[in-house]
Length: 271
Image (cartoon, rainbow, N blue to C red; front, top):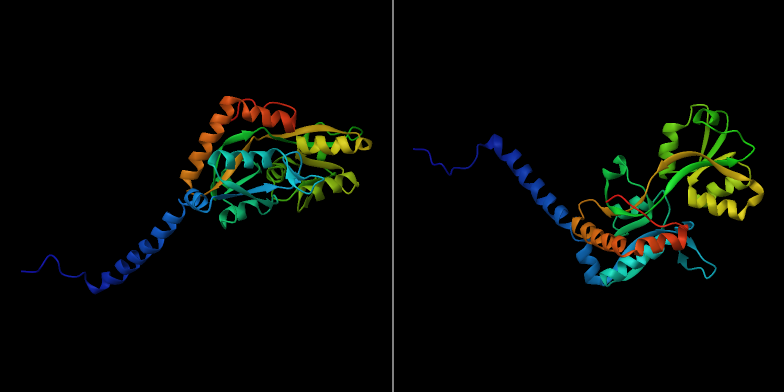
């Protein structure tokens, strides 16, 4: 009588061996995907990616130290975790890559949430308000998206306003993409582009510094609160940060941060 414990036929052994090898490779990856918080606690430091070219969310002050709403939020979270913070400067183009390659445990860098980004990273609850819009000189007639046809529009490559502008602008618009926000703003101020697509706070800062531009709000691109980026599958860290955000919203700390840097409270934010 054949034994029920005999080995699998030879034609099945190779697929079974491959399946076992695949499981062995995947298991460490799954374990790794859940240990960012534990590693941060072990080294007593959390590495947080922040912007340094996007005032008032993140910029370098006269003392050459980073400051801004995102910088303060990073320090706030680190303090609530009882950890030292290492601030890692990033740009719109590389901030997600820094998270994926574990150069940063969190990204607090005016990060909007969308379906494409959710495929590669996870997000906490929102922590601050933000919206993107199109701005241009008062003398330039722009009242509808079709009015951008034939005009040059500056935008930061990879930023959420870049993705949304691509959907909304007419085919006749000449969209010029720059590598960081400073370059985008400089292009508008110097007249390289007629229109700029950026965050309202950035535009406000730009207009305050350059009143001769007589720039004004033209079109709303998207109302997009800021979220904190977390590595894919890092649920332990994400849930812990969500606890900190919820408490900060309840006790008014988020409103205080927004008032300090944006001149308006955070208000109701998506969870």
